[in-house]
Amino acid sequence: MKTINGISASQGIAIGKVFFYLDEYLRVPEYKITEEEVDVELARFTAAIDKTREELKQLKLSINKESSINEAGFLDAHILMLDDPELSKLITKKITEEHHNAEWALYAVIKQYIDLLQSSNDEYIRERSFDLRDVARRVLGNLLYKKRVDLTHLTEEIILIAHELMPSDTLTMDKRMVKGIATDAGGKTSHTAILARAFEIPAVLGLRNITAEVRNGDQIIIDGGKGVVIVNPDDETLEEYRQRLREWQRKESELLNLNMLAAETRDGKKILLMANIEVPEETESVLSHGADGVGLYRSEFFFIQPGEFATEEEQYQAYSRVLSSMGDKPVTIRTIDLGGDKILPGTAAYFEETNPILGWRSIRFCMTRKDIFETQLRALLRASVHGNLRIMFPMISGVEELEQVLAFYEDVKAALVSEGVEINHNIPIGIMIEVPSAAMTADILARKVKFFSIGTNDLIQYTIAVDRGNEKIAYLYEPFHPGVLRLLKMIIEGAHSQSIPVAMCGEMAGDPYAAVILLGLGLDVFSMSSFSIPEIKNIIRSVSMVEAEELVGTIFEMKSYQEIDRFVRGWMDERFESLRR
Ligand code: PEP
Ligand code: MG
Image 1 (cartoon, rainbow, N blue to C red):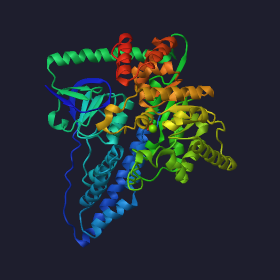
Image 2 (tube, helix red, strand yellow):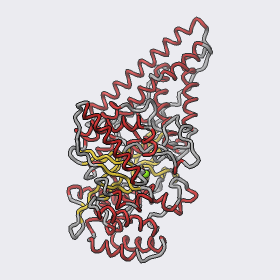
Image 3 (cartoon, rainbow, N blue to C red):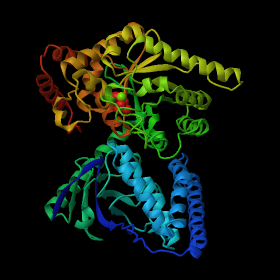
């Protein structure tokens, strides 16, 4: 028996047999061609590109046919990469001028690009090199006439083990048969992690060397929540995990039974529970977990894709898809929140600054790159007729900035109207409260918008001056810090003084230990990853506002986060069994 620690990417437990998906590391042949062979080699390369494009289009068609939502959006990005003129110019040059064979020319150029992406400080961009590799492998396979191992039709339930999974693997695999995933590579924001969560498949990634530790047919346990895999478990461990799996399934189905019930406290206060999404394909999971809508669609994920900046039409299509798949439920789309820790591939230099987190990011970026902002707002306004859209601006720091943003929005809207485009004229506009100055002027800002959504991920980082991505000081990042709690109270009171509702879409909203405190503070809407919704609903339904307000009264008397944390844990553990954090 061997226990290996990795990164928890998707919760849940799976026990099963290893299916070793060795997407053969294709050996790339290298040889020189003669001047006379150049044309033949170029024709071979073009034929492989054409064939790959055709395959990708077919793949997209077949996915779209089987699914009510567009899960295949990333394939467009792959097709774009195939047709990238810069790439094909470099590859052609290697063939015509350096006389390399087509396979090697492709490999050498792609490797350069991948190395560049991999050197980024941003995990998300590093992950995008997977897309490029995915496309390159397909082209290489076609040049070499090799067929990729197929995951689309599996005959038995498996635990998928691979060095790394390509987005097209994860998207097209037979999801009924894949019970768990473990890979050497990958992190929390990789495609594999995002999709595993969306499909609710337990997954542990970043295991470094799992492919060397297992053989086909080995028994394996995936503990997605803990980020642990156990290879060939002994009888005692196996029994323990079987028990935990039964317990997990019982709890999950019990929680899902709550889907039809409202999130209502025992004394009748109704709360809305919404979902956070990063990609349109998550809406299926949003609905199956009983969400009241989408509280945060991080639209910038749509832009952190390789290829050209998404056009108005592409954005319009994507937003419309999300809106129509959610029916009349509200969908809150946050405008582009780039910069800081979210950088586009190949633009690291463009965004380079001494203090990027305090710098040219988010709404500040949008208000200087009005071309990009306008394109997004036009796409959003056009899509607004397909569902219940709400637009939310991130990182607002004060009233002047907000007024400028609102004025720009009105200009874009007026231009569309004068073009005769049909739009919803009453889209609720809200802002994220994630900067302390906005929190402290909440009552002023609340006069200008229809709702607030508190972004605690950033609000905590700015309040305590603790970089949310720096593990060296992670111990300071504390949601129950009295300073943070006082700011939350100020935001909620400020909003309520102007009769607008307050949501929270930072991670704190999905933390079961924070749920009763947030209730007691008067939060109206909780937005979190779909998976957490049933558990938070269960907590809300089990307490009364009177109890929640009492709890808040007690902890506001306390002086330190440790004191609060200890007290709240005890309070919650006494009432609820096995909370997940
Ligand atoms: C936040 O800051 O809490 C938030 C929800 O936005 P993001 O995590 O995308 O910065
Ligand atoms: Mg934020």
